[in-house]
Amino acid sequence: MFLLSQLAGVALLLLVALDAFQTVLLPSARGVLNHTWVRLLWSGARSLPTGLGRRARSSVGPLSIVATVASWVALLWVGYALIYLPDVGTLGYSSDVRFEGSNWVAALYLSGTVLTTLGLGDVAAQSDGLRLLVVLESAGGLGIFTAALGYLPAIYTVVSELRTSAEAVSDLRATTPERAAALLQDDPGTVIEAVRRDVLATRQHLLRFPVLHSFHPPAEQSVLGVVEGATMLWAVARFGTSGERHPGVQRAAEALELGLHRLVDDCERHAGRIDVEDGRAAAREQVEQVRRAVGQHDSDRVGRHDPGDRALDDLARTNAVLRAYAAKHDYDFPA
Image 1 (cartoon, rainbow, N blue to C red):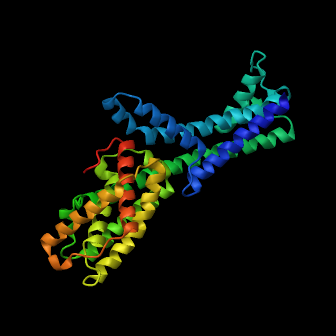
Image 2 (cartoon, rainbow, N blue to C red):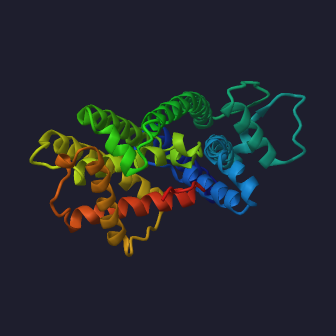
Image 3 (cartoon, rainbow, N blue to C red):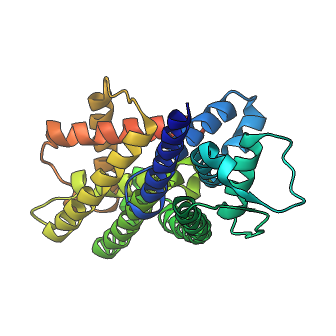
């Protein structure tokens, strides 16, 4: 029985160590505890009535971080207590300490005071092995609290930077072919390069902190605003501009396409299952809208080549991911 207690304690410690490593130090990974909390909180928020549910969804990201840190502390506390439990009888107690015969309470008390580095000394380890374990727990508690204190400011700095990138793209209002064509009329290379940098920055932020997908800012400050605006500008440059007359625009569009595809891949993993059925026909119609919009400004710029099935599939898939991401976050997806 005591052996099982200690094995269970070691398992909890390993779980916390792995989860903290993945969450704080390992880019693109999400610890199992954080992922579980996000799913639980998100499911709870979606089950609430519409108005209340929208407000609750905006708190899923922050609450999941708080719950994850609290889980680390709680599991360390219980894990070490399970390891101490078989040796409670060997502990040294001050004369006025009473635990009413409960070994479990004594083990929890020792673990709690060591983990929080209180160092009260009224319950102390007597054996050499237990003394070394107490030092290890104290170091682990200090490490977890330090990691949490460093993690929270870092993630909220990135939240601000992600919203800045999203607003930079959203402020262009490139959500329609007409507006995107007008933006690319005078200096398309500069506009596309600026948007490409915002796309790359957004993806790096989400790659470093996947939990950011669970934050729920206004649509224009979210990754949805970045993908939507960048996709429309890419479509105008890719399908609405002649490669022979404007090779520089095509090259800039190809560079934007690479970054956009990687960002869309990340969004698809978060959004879950997408539906691209009949999406190619809608994408072909979108290409025609783009060409008409470009032709209103300069008919000589309009690309006449067949976009090709692969390009249409890319556009259809991107639109499907946008719809799925918007639906999951309760955003309106513009037609």
